[in-house]
View 1 (cartoon, rainbow, N blue to C red):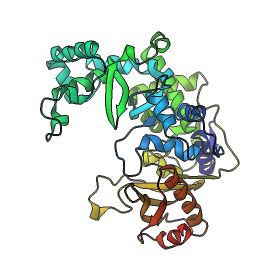
View 2 (cartoon, rainbow, N blue to C red):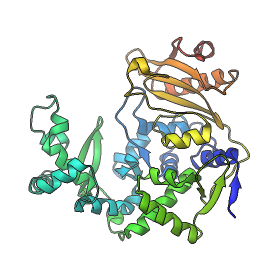
View 3 (tube, rainbow, N blue to C red):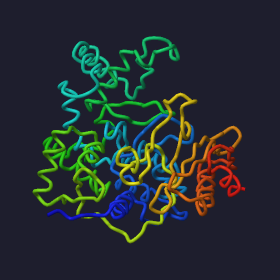
Length: 400
């Protein structure tokens, strides 16, 4: 009979696995602290939206505090990077040692078994063109999508419809090229063997089954306790592969099947998962943070629905455009719609809402402190609260 965990226990396990049971670093941040966080998470999602900060910078801030943003850039795109970019959970930065675990996905892309339908069709019909692009990169060195644009840069649709862009995306998915660096947010590509360290490239390629087991264990360690769907989503694996590999991992004693009260689906517990007596976290969470990117899991853990409203028409938005939930202790207690007004040097709180079950009291002062910390980290001199949302008056007073 499987072990049963209460919802509170599952929540604390999940928070500890994500790094929220650890004390923040109060100054003296090093690249080692950042690497530890990236290793713990297994993947950091990349996204272009820069209303506050591009999201890949935010998970480390949520866990470490005001770390130097240069640490991420050095680890991802510096002279001796510890991260590489590939399709993990969407476009992601992941520890370099994990690169061999995605070669099966690269092979599937090369054979046409995986990838966006349009790219698969393009590769089948225009492989000669793609090979020509690859030869050009081999001769020329690092390139961007703009180097292969078929119309003037900035022309409507040039990026979306360029054959050069399609070729680069297929070569990236297939592992022939990878991201050497980024200029602004634009990828600069080069041959994989000129970017990934030789020590990593020389690692044996595991079988798809071995790689999938390893990825599921990484996902399980990053989540602590999770359902099959949670684990599958972390690195976007198929239902069939996930189900088969999980059965093997349980059989081998590498994962424990457990029950969580209130969860309809069985769960899996990583053997190294910690269960602290309590969590005293205080963090603003990117809408793309690993803790909350699986929306149904977020609702199960915290009892609140977190939705990305960027693509919702303004008049239909409930909480705002770029909304960051506020993790306080073991609960999500509030949400704020933030915007970095870099010209004015102000972090704008465009709305502030309490969660339905939260009782305002200690929330506003704690949230105000976190907003001031974020403003300073972003190089902004002030925090300004707009009177929108039920928490806004108290938050405005607390910000002062």
